[in-house]
Length: 127
Image (tube, rainbow, N blue to C red; front, side, top):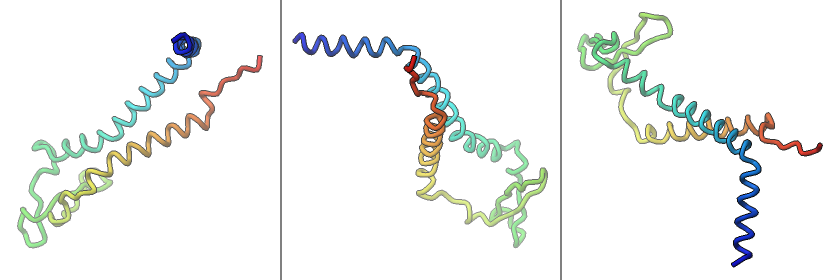
């Protein structure tokens, strides 16, 4: 029983002696998590904003045959410029559920790699 107690005491001492490092790591983790959440969520926000009734992209678009129900307005790089594409090109697919989490994982892995490459968590105990 005393062996387990000494193990936990030693472990607790190691954690409390590195409290500033854990606080620093927690702050960076929170910042990276917020960045990834914003990067993952922002495309959805802009999409919903662009299809809202007050948006110019929710207006009717003349299709190739003059039928408004078969074409979708797509914005181009220049403000005010639009392109009308057939509506059958815009539908949900199974990959829509896979892409956002994979993108978030790549961003988190890249951020962790950058932090490690910068050496932010290296200890310099050579005093």
